[in-house]
Picture 1 (cartoon, rainbow, N blue to C red):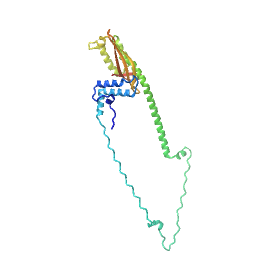
Picture 2: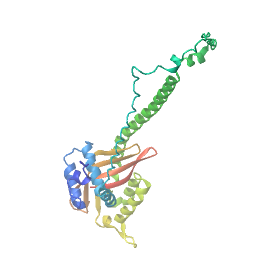
Picture 3: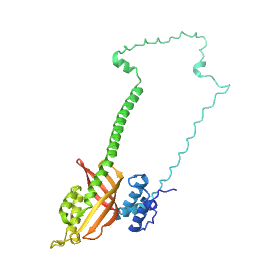
Length: 300
């Protein structure tokens, strides 16, 4: 019996593959797509990597793979009931029915037969107006018309809701993608000479939950240790600038969109030469009020 391919099959790795092997397979699979192409295969590779590179989700997925569903036994077909035998046809010598052959006693003339007169039929008074026309329509037809009308109302509501949702999802993708590009330009950049200003500007693009995590990591770059000694960014006089090359929509819902972002980061320490890092991150964007905010950033 054919089975659906697993996430391991899609990426072409063994079930015991290491995270490094999974990440390498994902990169090799997605490198052949142009940024922002948004094909179904591209999204499939991303979804496989999301599951297999998350330890908790991978354990849950492996547990699901270990369960083999049992097939329900087929119910036996009911045996056909024996057909009832028709009564035998009367033969030529069969006696006629008693009612048709009852003889009159000898010497007695048959008397007249009186049949009861039929009672006159009482005609119902004709109905007029709407009630009269409705009464002339069979009940089954009325019931069918009621069902059709109700189905038409439900269909109109469902179709209208579905079209509205599709329009919202269609609009959500480009808006979230543009917001992700603006946000990551600030979130992934900083200058040791004005770290606090860079931090506060970037925090405005984040949800409250993700902002808390971001501020903790950023403050470690700014200061290190309980004595307030300078952190690594200040010590090395680091200046990091992020340039977004392109974006693509991984998947989209009305209020939640995942965007893959291709980024070049230029890092200069002190008077040294700039170093360029090419990176790909997936930013989870959520809609809050009238804005799209970053709720998570995951690097690949």
